[in-house]
Length: 86
Image (cartoon, helix red, strand yellow):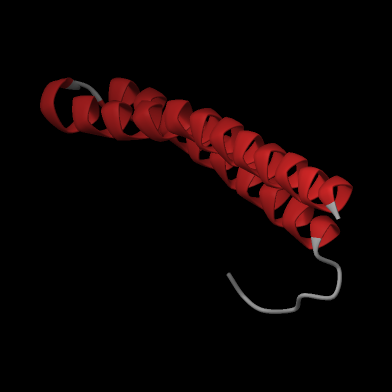
């Protein structure tokens, strides 16, 4: 019984660490996306500047999307019989 409880605690701690890492990894591209678009609205003087900043924001959004897809795959692998939508 104790081994089962200890195992459950390790799994819960592992999930907590994973979630913490995922959210930490998502914060940077979200911040870059938000700041890049905000700066574009305030300071870009030319079409080229605006396009460059939007391109960088798009790359951040694509990176973030990929991390979310990977997270979904990890969740599905951890719970193969759970077909609910989070």
